[in-house]
Length: 501
Ligand code: 5AD
Ligand code: SF4
Image (cartoon, rainbow, N blue to C red; front, side, top):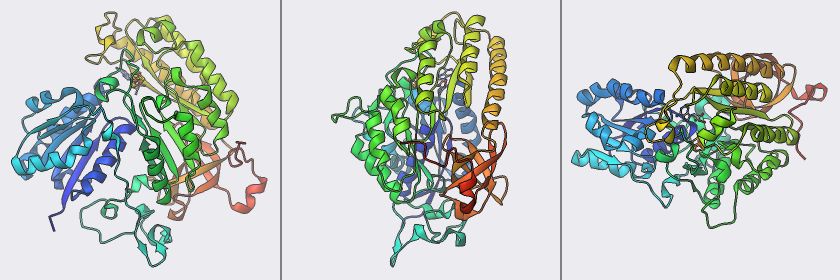
């Protein structure tokens, strides 16, 4: 039997990257590499990078610097994957002499063969071609837990097992390996909720954005593959599916079958065992009435939408090439709230885009106050090489950008806290994701509106949907208490009663 090897992956950026890391780990397990959380014992160190803004991009070089000595001491193979790899390609190999591998966003399935080339022939490799067939989107399905007699091991009473053991039984752990039981199965983080990629790439070419250059054009996965994957995960005990794509609203474009995103959601909603569906990201321009209606019609679709607005100024939106106006964005929000009154809305915004004047920034603040987002991810504009906005000459000074960001974040902080406080005294349906990191006596989970709730409980609750009364609201989370079944009749059942027809 070949010697077991260890892989250490450091992940930056969005959920797509996190999910790519999971896919890579699954792929490498079948090539005899198991994950380790300790870089010092790794035979292969991979940095999965993000280049959407300047800050995460710079992290790749400091990460590489940190691992140089492991190459020298242990001969570890060192690689860079993700968006910086796609963008920089051979330049990275030239700049970092101890780097063995640069692997682009479409080349993940080739990883085992590329590793062999490095191991056996000592080659340095750069693989950054795009795959027009979309084969790179295919996933290795995780292995279902073994059956002993008539007992499925994922149904065994969890109280006798370690907290991470949901869905998998501990099988002869090897010392030093962090996921000993995960061989070709689901890793701890994926066992209650899992990501599923439905499309990748983007055709929008917003003037500030590097994504279409590093992730390629939009490509959708055939629906039968997606349904098969979700069904498989649901059979393994996964309760919540997070559908991923740079612009999920354009799902189906270019496929031979007659399908769009709302239709796909309807089919996923039918899958037995699955309890919750979420998705990200949506482009406001492509948010159709059919999708808005899905929030009222599909019981498993959670009441949360992430709908980046980027700016509240029509002038800036035009320069960004976003394809909507402040008013048309607000109309979509109104419509969502009409159809689904309890929907939580989160968003992304950029401050200091070239040409942004004080009055444009005021429009952004006005939009924030009107919508009252549940949460907002705010960024200073960061020029990306190769994008159109990088050529714009009317750049905003760094100090102005920073001041605007601080003002905006202060306003949003107040709104987020108020939104959380509105939930105090309410009963929310919470999906328990695991034990709390802060206290052994607590579990942590999320409401349907995607808010984090901590409350007293033990490992037996992991993977369950429970009614929780919210007792305290904080800026980033909620505290609550579980409602015993017999008390449910006297509660304010705002979220426990299905609000959907
Ligand atoms: N500068 C600043 N923020 C950016 N984003 C994307 N590109 C840039 C950039 N060049 C932000 C957008 C996007 C989020 C993922 O990152 O708000 O929605
Ligand atoms: Fe980037 Fe715009 Fe595509 Fe979003 S829609 S990934 S911001 S180009």
